[in-house]
Length: 339
Image (cartoon, rainbow, N blue to C red; front, side, top):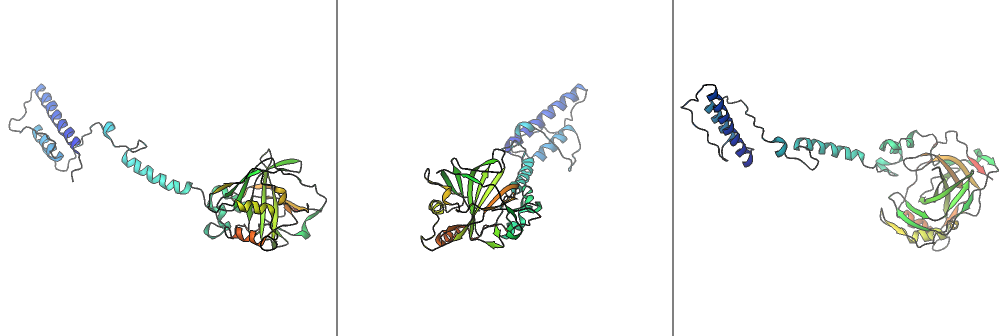
């Protein structure tokens, strides 16, 4: 099959004529006359390159070798086809194939709470998630009240103000990104509230008991260290009975689709409406309960649960029926129980 386009054919023909004239000039200069019986070469856009080559050899008085390849390079740099990356077609094909392969592995690992990407595989989904399997101070944990360090402990100082917030459905939970002056002070450091979110059932267990839900309030200090306050949520009455005021506000602006964000009215959010009246808590060092499972997180778990209604609980579970990581090994960690 002839793969030369018309432009290449014209260039090939012209080169054959130039080669013939140059050879003839060289032969004349050397005192040789070209054979009179050899036909002239005619080049046209319809010429077959193989025929042109044969005529060139015939005109030069050289035996035609059927399997000998005649290579003509014409402005390779100027006429070579390139792709959008400036690569030749063959190289571009290789690059595209490699890029496609690398893109498949470079994408974000989609971890989940069940199935093949569930908690048991988090450590293998991505190199940054390895702590999920190798870490020795992972969260959540089961807190056994009979083995805790009981005694006096500093009270956690809460400083919350009416704030603005954005409610986000991030594909794993309902999260509330908080804007405002909200913080806690504990262990000599002040941690600013960044966001809070929900899990069902509760990730933390008390004496092997799980509660229907839990709210995690994530705080960060100036050094980038995290402190998470866990408020266990138990169900109360049906209908409006037992409604938690803060949950009611958040659920009102709850986005239903993954990736949606809904802004709450300014000053509507008041975190005191979520906190239990009993200030006693458990304290331990742990990790994030979602990938990358970073350790060094200070955990404060209120002993007394807050109350939500059955309807509030049902609404959340219709979107996320199970988004809790299983409890992790304590590995000799101390758990303080503030009296």
